[in-house]
Image (cartoon, rainbow, N blue to C red; front, side):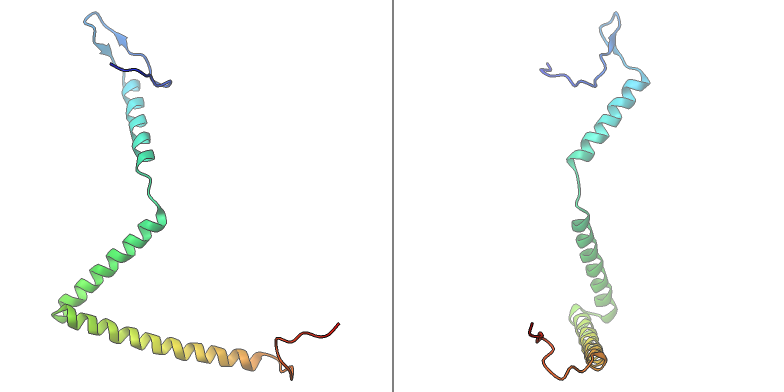
Length: 118
């Protein structure tokens, strides 16, 4: 027994046997309403989905690397060596960029943070 009724719910027509007659439109409305309700219940967060996808891809990549190298320990060593090489390249690039900025900055002769007296 139902104690409430949706406002958008159509009242089915009953036949002599007491069973409601549902039309295709009634079925389609009910289907669409069910999909809408389920979608509202299971909202997902795009950033969380991205983080989970990236983590899954990294896990799959490490598994493939471990299979290729023969063990997870050797696969981890390969990843560590590549990270150290990338960090070294990043440090060199950062130092070069810092040098270029220092050369491009005009020489003021004083402290760069000092302001003129009014």
